[in-house]
Length: 227
Image 1: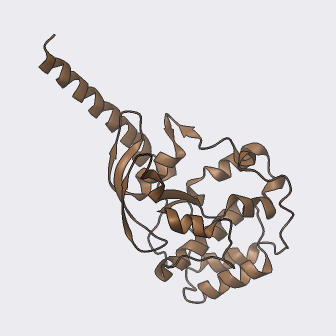
Image 2: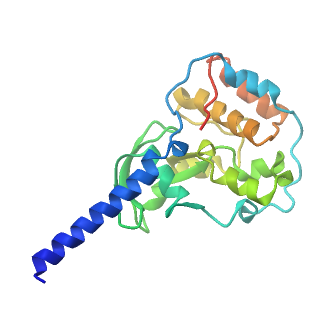
């Protein structure tokens, strides 16, 4: 077989694999939440009022492993790459369904970030758990089954690609201690936190609820994201 024919077959195979990855990541409705501003019937505020208000439970027993051993996979694509593919533009893949490059319009800072996969560059874009997992643990998740906690940690409703430094700064903070510096995104951000807490029967602290309410005062018609 000539080298040129081998090269053509290799390229064709890579195209087929990349197309399959794209189909799994992009076309699966489960992984396509509505991220645009939502101005509807004020569902976020009503949902917040439906949440229980309690103090934080002790952090005793918390570890990341309580929410599964890392990212789950769906038909060969792990959650991190699925969310990168959802949130980035101009995405390119390798032949193992990994996102190797793309552009993020970071919702937390408003800055545009060029993402390139690699040891020294991948962490520029991280996947944030909108409700920090330790916060979830202290507001009801320790009462969930291990399977339900793993579902929470991999739920696209709970995940956003974001600037790595902003994600690290947030750490395990709730709305009372951390909000995105991009004020235009704060309504959507707290609405997503409320949606996650409602879906998984988590509670809020009084300080957290007050902080969310202050944000929603600027957007009283903010609806909940559903996926």
